[in-house]
Amino acid sequence: MFADWLESKGDPRGALMALALAGKDAEAKAMIEAQADVFLGPLAPHQKEYDYEARDAFMWKYGFIHAARLSHNHYTKKLDGKLADVLRALLAHDSGHFLTELTLTFNNDPNEDNLQELIDVLAEQPRPMLRKLHLGDFKYAGAARDEDRGEDTEISWYSVGDLSRLWPALPRLETLIIQTGSATSAIGKGTILGALDLPALRRLEYRTGGLEAANAQALVTAKLPAIEHLDLWFGQENYGGTAGADELGTLLARTDLPKLRHLGIMNAEFIDDAIDAIAKSALLPQLTELDLSLGCLTDGGATALSERRAAFAHLARLDVSHSYLTDAGKGALQGIARSLEVAEQRDAGDDRYAAVGE
Image (cartoon, rainbow, N blue to C red; front, side, top):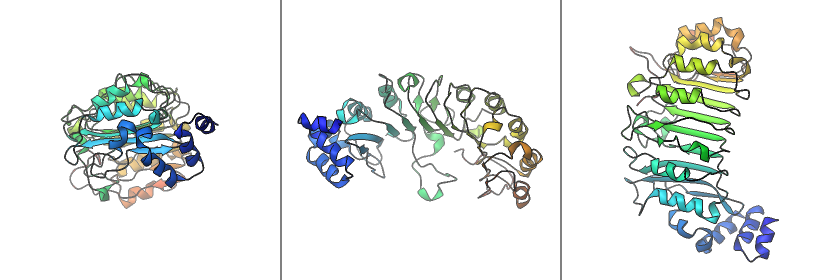
């Protein structure tokens, strides 16, 4: 109906919407290219990321830009002006009116610069249409689950910036993924979360090689009444990972996350010592998935899990991959959940570390 109304007014977007709704993607793409002045305007020069992979910056749906990926790595491609200006133009353009998903990766130097200028643009006014925000979608060195992808930078070097002012602008955000280093390890001073109050958020992943106590406290006390999936990476102390059992205990004691079904206590060096607290947690009975991967779970931790298997028997899935389990430890976990993921155990050697640090 909207497309028909626009067409009746002589607006070419009506015809574009009609093509998209009919599944005529090639024709819709050709129309956008032919009338770039209308459908893109100042965005026309920025249809690819300024990055190694040069992926499409804009993904269209029903005649509007549904998702956007913005990245500028100055070692790869030169951008005249600032990426923040591209984001501001996108948010102001008619084609960006229904922008639902946004990914921000690099903002000039991938190691030294953070995303602060972009964050400040987002925070300028409410963005009620935005449902998904991914900050830091880069390939990092030593990624345990991505070893074949190469790398863009070290996770420990990467900074996002101060997010404190952003959250009130995103009242309907449903997915938030942040991949970052810490203030200790990153040249650009890491990430400051501030007070998280996201009433519609359903999925939150905080991926880091060093979770600082202040950010951990913000995460475990966040107001997330709709949260269903929560992954927290704790990391290594050498890379700013000062959070641990105290912050985890605060999370495990919560009774105000009624929809939480997946909990990831990941990349944690203290995980062996946390098994008893997890087993007694007020959250555990409502979970269907528990992810303890990437950390320092040993046969001792596996024994602790096995001894408390009644508490975990309801789980549909338990993930302990990329840990330090021997065949005996893996054997002790058999039958503890309906699905058990034990792939790619690491060899302890002399020392044990969280899988992701540097």
